[in-house]
Image 1: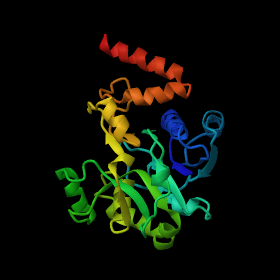
Image 2: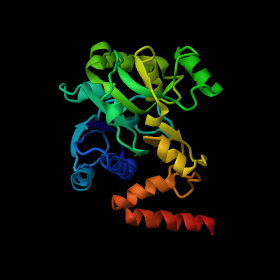
Image 3: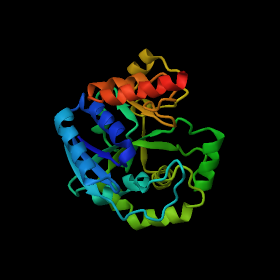
Image 4: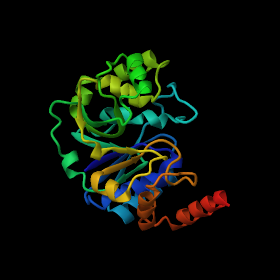
Length: 276
C-alpha cells in the first residue's frame, strides 16, 4: 500500500499516531512524505518510528520551493497545505496509485477494499464533504465556477489515480488555476482539487472519510462500527485540551499504544488545569 502524507512540524505526532493506526491493519506500507519545512532530524525520527512501531518504510520527497506565493490564512498558514497537488508529478513514475491521508485521522479497520477499487476512469476516489449542501459551501461552489449539484468533496482522504491524473492535468494548469481563483479560495487546495476533478472523481461511501467535529457527541459504539476512517476535521483537535467532542478516546488509545505516554500525561495536566 502506498500512502502519502504532507505535514509540518506541528503535525508530526498526530501523523505518527495516524500511521500507527493504519499499520494495525496493513503490514506492507510505503509512506511517501512530501515535505518542505521539516528538519533532517525530524524526518529521521519519523523514519525510525515507522520502522520500529509500524514495520513500514519512509520515502521523503522534498517539495521546498513550490507554492511560495499561494493564498493562505491564519489557520491554514503553511504551503504544505498544497503539497498533495504535487503527488502526480513528484512521486515515482512507476506508482499507479497512492492514498493521501491527512494527519488528523484514525484508521478504524482495513482499507484494502477502498485502496484496491477500480477508478472507473476517474482521476481520484474521494468522499463528499459533510457540509456539501449548506449555504456557505453552496455559495463557495458558485464562486469557484461549480454547479450547485456538483458534489463538493473533502480532500483529507484521496486515492489518486496517478498515471491518469498526470496525463490529463499539467502542473502549470494547477498553478494557473490557483492564480485565477486566488480571491475566492476558502479551503485552498481542497477548492482547487474540486475544480480540477468536478467531472473526473469517483464518490465513495462516507465510512472512508467520516468527518467529525469538536462539538460532536457521537456514540463510541456507533462510530466504531460504521467508520473505517475517522477524520477529526475542524478545531480544536482531539489532542488539544479544549477539545469537547466524544472521540478523543480513539485518538489517545492509538497514541498510547504507539508510545506517546508523556504527551497523554501532558494533555491531561493541561485539561485539568483548564477545569480548575
